[in-house]
Image 1: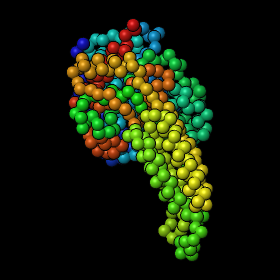
Image 2 (image 1 turned 45 degrees about the vertical axis):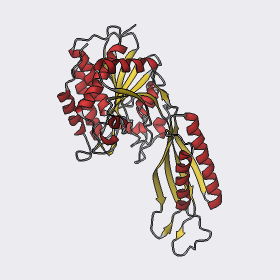
Image 3 (image 1 turned 120 degrees about the vertical axis):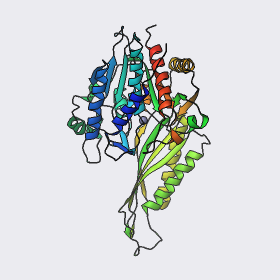
Image 4 (image 1 turned 180 degrees about the vertical axis):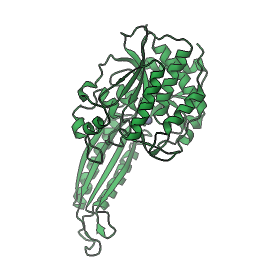
Length: 414
Ligand SMILES: [Zn+2]
């Protein structure tokens, strides 16, 4: 089998998709269910249709483009990723897995390959948490990780529910219909940029991900007492931001304390009320992201952070409330897909290494209903979620070749 990639066309398509953006190039802003998102979806659907793929769109906008195999009754092999982009990000995150997945299918079609199992390309809705505060919305719903009741409870910052927003975007029907039976796919393989520096630094073409870290995130609401910055003297103050500051450092300290390189914790949001220079902060909201490849260790850090909050609250006489957003299990790649990927790298004569993903992806949730693996290609300086995010065409090409070969191998009925 000799696989050729149409690199020029793939580059043109990546560029064309990047133009569906609410930010000026090179930045990309494409928030789920926005007008730009609708335009990009329309363009993609037309593109998928050109190559004889059968389309299905579910009630939250997850899109399935199927290349029927000679044994369509068997569980299919799937690939795919997302195309929503956080504000002022780049053009490769997620996109490489969608357009690269399409090119992998086309490359197999060009050489006259006939799959036994169907091969399906999935475009997941809202991998980014931008609009509804929770990542991987589409794949969580597909895999039953998130209950259909979120339709009425998740809201965007305009106060509109998921139900209202998705229906306005043309995606109707009950969310209960989304969940896929566990035998829908025999394998799911996602191609993605690394979003980290390891492959580039080690000059390795392909990262075969063995496990994806267990993410957790939560909000902390710190309630103190406000007052005039001049009138209120220092003794007896219940400054919510001072308490929050101690909490931020406790988050860092407890993550470092595990001594494990895979424990990471970040306070990424701090909102101060009333936010005036001459007013003592009465209320602060923090949002914390905590991840680890080891779920127990992560939960241990979470417990430490909780007890630090309790201690700080007591000592500073403020109230601290914690609200979990999510606490997910880590995902393990399936050995048979790891083997297929390794064999594909060897057949294509590209360098590869096994690695861990600390970022989570739709694969994390597809792992609940199918054997999965995640494949990384290098990105420049490990940069992602920025306008200068970049993956070299030849690196994307190698990833697509490995993906095509892997999909071909996994599509055998055996
Ligand atoms: Zn992504």
